Length: 183
Image (cartoon, rainbow, N blue to C red; front, side, top):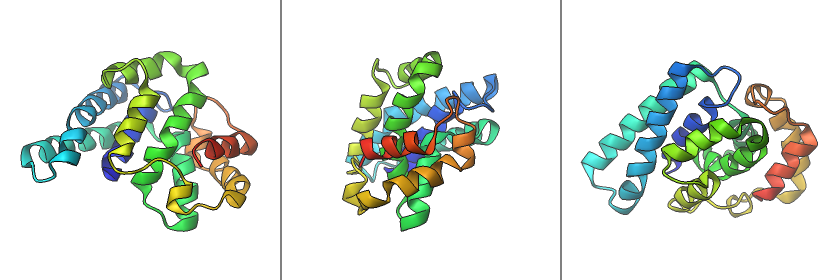
């Protein structure tokens, strides 16, 4: 589930980062639709080879979208936390993506609405959180991230390339608040 959530974050971010393009958008939407469709089945029936193969194809398409467009703030937060504590990248993206979507919505609402449509929902944050729960990924604290480090993590994340490519600039304090919202 974690790897699929990382791929889903690639799709979401490819739609709104500074490096986006029509080609990356098309790939991101295809990947998001595929991952959304098959991840619940793979989580419930892990031995379903057809579903797993389709999920792999969705993740591959998501990787191509990432390669064309780049990463955003959700990944920057996941990388800062994961790099400090050695935590799984996919789990951290599952937790951080909803906060990044909420933060970016005021400036890239149309792009996030396209992501929502690919997920078959009007509430992409809720859907991402629902998919994340399939892997038990809900809060940073459940992964052992200490709350007293949030300010330092906010600063570290704000310095990463994904934060700099984000469509809405984020100060270290704003990133720390986003991390607190998922702590």
